[in-house]
Length: 169
Length: 104
Image (cartoon, rainbow over all chains, first blue to last red; front, side, top):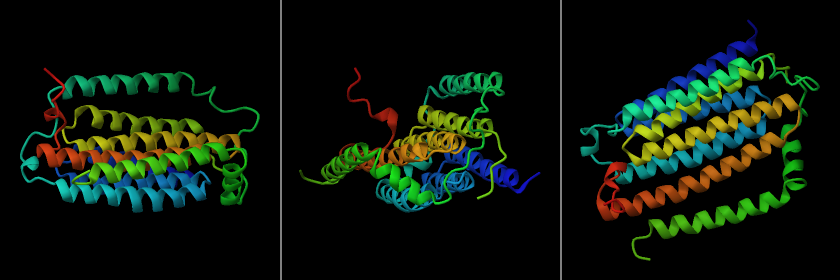
Protein backbone atom coordinates (compact mmCIF):
# COMPACT_ATOMS: atom_id res chain seq x y z
CA UNK A 1 0.00 0.00 0.00
CA UNK A 2 1.56 3.25 -1.10
CA UNK A 3 1.76 6.39 0.98
CA UNK A 4 -0.73 8.00 -1.37
CA UNK A 5 -3.38 5.42 -0.61
CA UNK A 6 -2.73 5.54 3.13
CA UNK A 7 -3.14 9.33 3.10
CA UNK A 8 -6.31 9.12 1.04
CA UNK A 9 -7.86 6.49 3.32
CA UNK A 10 -6.92 8.49 6.42
CA UNK A 11 -8.40 11.77 5.16
CA UNK A 12 -11.48 10.08 3.70
CA UNK A 13 -12.23 8.20 6.93
CA UNK A 14 -11.68 11.39 8.94
CA UNK A 15 -13.99 13.38 6.66
CA UNK A 16 -16.82 10.85 6.59
CA UNK A 17 -16.58 10.03 10.31
CA UNK A 18 -16.72 13.63 11.43
CA UNK A 19 -19.48 14.39 8.91
CA UNK A 20 -21.62 11.66 10.50
CA UNK A 21 -20.86 13.05 13.97
CA UNK A 22 -21.65 16.57 12.73
CA UNK A 23 -25.15 15.56 11.66
CA UNK A 24 -25.93 13.48 14.75
CA UNK A 25 -24.57 15.56 17.65
CA UNK A 26 -27.05 17.19 19.99
CA UNK A 27 -24.91 20.21 20.90
CA UNK A 28 -24.47 22.46 17.86
CA UNK A 29 -21.09 23.71 19.07
CA UNK A 30 -19.87 20.11 18.81
CA UNK A 31 -21.45 19.93 15.35
CA UNK A 32 -19.49 23.02 14.30
CA UNK A 33 -16.22 21.54 15.59
CA UNK A 34 -16.85 18.29 13.69
CA UNK A 35 -17.64 20.27 10.54
CA UNK A 36 -14.28 22.02 10.96
CA UNK A 37 -12.62 18.59 11.15
CA UNK A 38 -14.39 17.51 7.96
CA UNK A 39 -13.30 20.67 6.15
CA UNK A 40 -9.69 20.20 7.26
CA UNK A 41 -9.75 16.58 6.07
CA UNK A 42 -11.10 17.78 2.73
CA UNK A 43 -8.26 20.29 2.61
CA UNK A 44 -5.90 17.33 3.04
CA UNK A 45 -7.59 15.62 0.09
CA UNK A 46 -7.05 18.78 -1.98
CA UNK A 47 -3.38 18.80 -1.06
CA UNK A 48 -3.09 15.16 -2.00
CA UNK A 49 -4.67 15.97 -5.37
CA UNK A 50 -2.06 18.64 -6.02
CA UNK A 51 -4.32 21.67 -5.52
CA UNK A 52 -2.11 23.64 -3.14
CA UNK A 53 -3.82 26.98 -3.69
CA UNK A 54 -7.23 25.49 -2.99
CA UNK A 55 -5.82 23.85 0.15
CA UNK A 56 -4.78 27.25 1.49
CA UNK A 57 -8.09 28.84 0.45
CA UNK A 58 -9.99 26.04 2.17
CA UNK A 59 -8.08 26.41 5.43
CA UNK A 60 -8.07 30.21 5.56
CA UNK A 61 -11.49 30.96 4.11
CA UNK A 62 -13.62 28.01 5.21
CA UNK A 63 -12.09 27.08 8.53
CA UNK A 64 -10.79 30.54 9.43
CA UNK A 65 -13.64 32.62 8.05
CA UNK A 66 -16.94 30.86 7.53
CA UNK A 67 -16.71 28.56 10.54
CA UNK A 68 -15.79 31.42 12.87
CA UNK A 69 -18.91 33.19 11.58
CA UNK A 70 -20.95 30.05 12.36
CA UNK A 71 -19.54 29.78 15.87
CA UNK A 72 -20.30 33.48 16.49
CA UNK A 73 -23.92 33.03 15.47
CA UNK A 74 -24.19 29.84 17.54
CA UNK A 75 -23.00 31.80 20.57
CA UNK A 76 -25.53 34.55 19.82
CA UNK A 77 -28.57 32.31 19.41
CA UNK A 78 -27.64 29.31 21.53
CA UNK A 79 -30.61 28.33 23.67
CA UNK A 80 -30.30 25.94 26.56
CA UNK A 81 -33.79 24.63 25.81
CA UNK A 82 -32.68 23.47 22.37
CA UNK A 83 -30.45 20.88 24.05
CA UNK A 84 -33.39 19.16 25.72
CA UNK A 85 -35.84 18.93 22.85
CA UNK A 86 -35.79 16.31 20.03
CA UNK A 87 -33.12 17.20 17.50
CA UNK A 88 -34.75 15.51 14.50
CA UNK A 89 -38.03 16.52 12.92
CA UNK A 90 -41.14 14.43 12.32
CA UNK A 91 -40.28 13.37 8.77
CA UNK A 92 -36.86 12.07 9.80
CA UNK A 93 -37.42 8.41 8.90
CA UNK A 94 -38.89 8.95 5.44
CA UNK A 95 -36.39 11.73 4.73
CA UNK A 96 -33.45 9.60 5.84
CA UNK A 97 -34.60 6.62 3.79
CA UNK A 98 -35.10 8.81 0.71
CA UNK A 99 -31.65 10.35 1.09
CA UNK A 100 -30.11 6.88 1.43
CA UNK A 101 -32.02 5.73 -1.68
CA UNK A 102 -30.60 8.73 -3.55
CA UNK A 103 -27.11 7.82 -2.36
CA UNK A 104 -27.62 4.16 -3.32
CA UNK A 105 -28.74 5.17 -6.82
CA UNK A 106 -25.65 7.29 -7.45
CA UNK A 107 -23.50 4.55 -5.92
CA UNK A 108 -25.03 1.99 -8.29
CA UNK A 109 -24.36 4.28 -11.26
CA UNK A 110 -20.74 4.75 -10.16
CA UNK A 111 -20.32 1.03 -9.51
CA UNK A 112 -21.63 -0.08 -12.90
CA UNK A 113 -19.47 2.48 -14.69
CA UNK A 114 -16.34 2.11 -12.59
CA UNK A 115 -14.16 0.81 -15.42
CA UNK A 116 -15.34 3.45 -17.89
CA UNK A 117 -14.35 6.27 -15.60
CA UNK A 118 -10.60 6.08 -16.24
CA UNK A 119 -10.26 8.95 -18.68
CA UNK A 120 -8.28 7.37 -21.53
CA UNK A 121 -6.17 10.04 -23.29
CA UNK A 122 -4.66 12.02 -20.43
CA UNK A 123 -4.96 9.54 -17.60
CA UNK A 124 -2.99 10.67 -14.55
CA UNK A 125 -2.02 13.84 -16.40
CA UNK A 126 0.38 16.00 -14.47
CA UNK A 127 -0.70 19.45 -13.44
CA UNK A 128 1.72 22.32 -13.51
CA UNK A 129 3.97 22.13 -10.45
CA UNK A 130 3.39 25.86 -9.92
CA UNK A 131 -0.23 25.45 -8.96
CA UNK A 132 -0.92 28.95 -7.60
CA UNK A 133 0.50 30.58 -10.70
CA UNK A 134 -1.60 28.35 -12.97
CA UNK A 135 -4.80 29.10 -11.01
CA UNK A 136 -4.04 32.84 -11.09
CA UNK A 137 -3.44 32.73 -14.84
CA UNK A 138 -6.77 30.95 -15.39
CA UNK A 139 -8.65 33.31 -13.03
CA UNK A 140 -7.38 36.48 -14.69
CA UNK A 141 -7.50 35.37 -18.31
CA UNK A 142 -10.16 32.79 -19.13
CA UNK A 143 -12.37 33.38 -16.11
CA UNK A 144 -12.01 37.13 -15.66
CA UNK A 145 -15.70 37.87 -16.27
CA UNK A 146 -16.94 35.25 -13.75
CA UNK A 147 -14.38 36.65 -11.32
CA UNK A 148 -15.85 40.15 -11.63
CA UNK A 149 -19.37 38.75 -11.24
CA UNK A 150 -18.23 36.88 -8.11
CA UNK A 151 -16.91 40.15 -6.66
CA UNK A 152 -20.31 41.79 -7.26
CA UNK A 153 -21.94 38.76 -5.60
CA UNK A 154 -19.72 39.20 -2.55
CA UNK A 155 -20.61 42.91 -2.38
CA UNK A 156 -24.32 42.06 -2.52
CA UNK A 157 -23.89 39.38 0.15
CA UNK A 158 -21.99 41.83 2.38
CA UNK A 159 -24.73 44.46 2.11
CA UNK A 160 -27.38 41.79 2.61
CA UNK A 161 -25.72 40.40 5.73
CA UNK A 162 -25.35 43.89 7.24
CA UNK A 163 -28.98 44.75 6.52
CA UNK A 164 -30.24 41.41 7.89
CA UNK A 165 -28.20 41.56 11.09
CA UNK A 166 -29.02 45.20 11.90
CA UNK A 167 -31.49 45.84 14.66
CA UNK A 168 -33.28 48.74 12.98
CA UNK A 169 -33.11 49.21 9.24
CA UNK B 1 4.43 16.30 -6.62
CA UNK B 2 4.15 12.56 -6.84
CA UNK B 3 1.72 11.09 -9.35
CA UNK B 4 -1.49 10.03 -7.67
CA UNK B 5 -2.17 6.33 -8.04
CA UNK B 6 -5.76 6.45 -6.88
CA UNK B 7 -8.50 6.07 -9.50
CA UNK B 8 -11.02 8.94 -9.67
CA UNK B 9 -13.76 6.49 -8.63
CA UNK B 10 -12.64 6.65 -5.03
CA UNK B 11 -12.85 10.44 -4.93
CA UNK B 12 -16.34 10.23 -6.39
CA UNK B 13 -17.34 7.68 -3.74
CA UNK B 14 -15.97 9.90 -0.94
CA UNK B 15 -17.81 12.86 -2.43
CA UNK B 16 -21.00 10.80 -2.68
CA UNK B 17 -20.74 9.75 0.98
CA UNK B 18 -20.29 13.35 2.16
CA UNK B 19 -23.12 14.53 -0.13
CA UNK B 20 -25.54 11.88 1.21
CA UNK B 21 -24.70 12.72 4.83
CA UNK B 22 -25.27 16.39 4.03
CA UNK B 23 -28.66 15.67 2.43
CA UNK B 24 -29.69 13.64 5.49
CA UNK B 25 -28.64 16.55 7.71
CA UNK B 26 -30.62 19.09 5.66
CA UNK B 27 -33.76 16.95 5.62
CA UNK B 28 -33.86 15.67 9.19
CA UNK B 29 -32.37 18.24 11.58
CA UNK B 30 -34.61 20.79 13.27
CA UNK B 31 -31.94 23.38 14.08
CA UNK B 32 -31.52 25.80 11.17
CA UNK B 33 -27.84 26.37 11.94
CA UNK B 34 -27.13 22.65 11.52
CA UNK B 35 -29.11 22.72 8.26
CA UNK B 36 -26.86 25.55 7.01
CA UNK B 37 -23.76 23.60 8.09
CA UNK B 38 -25.05 20.56 6.19
CA UNK B 39 -25.39 22.74 3.08
CA UNK B 40 -21.74 23.72 3.52
CA UNK B 41 -20.93 20.00 3.69
CA UNK B 42 -22.77 19.40 0.39
CA UNK B 43 -20.89 22.23 -1.33
CA UNK B 44 -17.67 20.77 0.00
CA UNK B 45 -18.50 17.36 -1.47
CA UNK B 46 -19.01 19.03 -4.85
CA UNK B 47 -15.59 20.66 -4.54
CA UNK B 48 -13.93 17.25 -4.11
CA UNK B 49 -15.47 16.15 -7.41
CA UNK B 50 -14.29 19.29 -9.20
CA UNK B 51 -10.73 19.04 -7.90
CA UNK B 52 -10.51 15.30 -8.60
CA UNK B 53 -11.51 15.79 -12.24
CA UNK B 54 -9.21 18.79 -12.52
CA UNK B 55 -6.42 16.49 -11.39
CA UNK B 56 -7.33 13.77 -13.85
CA UNK B 57 -7.70 16.09 -16.86
CA UNK B 58 -4.50 17.88 -15.98
CA UNK B 59 -6.06 21.35 -16.16
CA UNK B 60 -6.81 23.92 -13.46
CA UNK B 61 -10.34 24.73 -14.68
CA UNK B 62 -11.92 22.51 -12.03
CA UNK B 63 -9.95 24.24 -9.29
CA UNK B 64 -11.11 27.64 -10.54
CA UNK B 65 -14.70 26.39 -10.40
CA UNK B 66 -14.08 25.13 -6.86
CA UNK B 67 -12.92 28.65 -5.92
CA UNK B 68 -16.19 30.06 -7.27
CA UNK B 69 -18.12 27.45 -5.27
CA UNK B 70 -16.26 28.50 -2.11
CA UNK B 71 -17.12 32.14 -2.90
CA UNK B 72 -20.78 31.20 -3.17
CA UNK B 73 -20.58 29.26 0.08
CA UNK B 74 -19.15 32.30 1.85
CA UNK B 75 -21.88 34.58 0.48
CA UNK B 76 -24.57 32.06 1.37
CA UNK B 77 -23.26 31.61 4.91
CA UNK B 78 -23.09 35.37 5.54
CA UNK B 79 -26.63 36.08 4.30
CA UNK B 80 -28.07 32.89 5.82
CA UNK B 81 -26.64 33.57 9.25
CA UNK B 82 -27.90 37.18 9.01
CA UNK B 83 -31.39 35.86 8.27
CA UNK B 84 -31.13 33.44 11.21
CA UNK B 85 -30.12 36.30 13.54
CA UNK B 86 -33.02 38.49 12.34
CA UNK B 87 -35.44 35.58 12.70
CA UNK B 88 -34.16 34.73 16.18
CA UNK B 89 -34.74 38.32 17.27
CA UNK B 90 -38.34 38.24 16.11
CA UNK B 91 -39.46 34.73 17.06
CA UNK B 92 -36.98 33.54 19.74
CA UNK B 93 -36.41 30.23 17.98
CA UNK B 94 -33.97 28.61 15.55
CA UNK B 95 -36.05 25.50 14.87
CA UNK B 96 -37.01 24.88 11.25
CA UNK B 97 -40.40 23.35 12.01
CA UNK B 98 -41.48 26.39 14.00
CA UNK B 99 -40.89 28.65 10.98
CA UNK B 100 -44.43 28.10 9.73
CA UNK B 101 -45.86 31.60 9.32
CA UNK B 102 -46.62 30.96 5.64
CA UNK B 103 -48.47 27.72 6.38
CA UNK B 104 -52.19 27.55 7.11
